[in-house]
Length: 246
Image: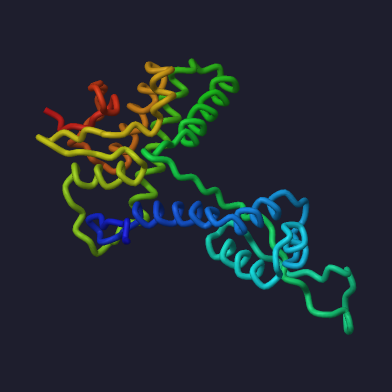
């Protein structure tokens, strides 16, 4: 079943990324594969198929299949090295070794982006400490800069041959890619999901203010001057909306 969907440029970035994350997590549902991943991840150095088979008490022929499947899913990485440490003629062929990938796999339904909130808040605290800036001002500026970065990334990935679309459509496409689940009606984009949900419930003023600055930065970075980001809390929705300027 294809879980991807196309945006206005005919691309499937949101669905493809989601499918890739789900596939990676799904690969660990198989008990032997999960045991092998946990074994490899726990080792201080890359391990061979034989070491993994011995460590998990599994037959070697099935270990090869499962390890390579984990590599295909991006959960493990491969390196080649002679385990004997010998070099030169007669040293034998290097062994294929496996280690945990640096790739991070996270699936959250609905989408949550606490990593993004952490990056913004860490940058703001760092600046506030270094430059004696009010923390609220530092958070607003760091969030707006993150919005600019998101807009620039979207612009770099856009198909130059595609029709640009109106500001509401362009903004919806970018916000959808970052988990906001936009809904457009009557020249207003409401956001059905807050990527910072639990933080917003515990620290409403702080997080909603950060979110407002971030979305304002997206609009500014995309040159959507006909839209504005506003705080407009509504049950079941994110506290921020983007609407056409009156």
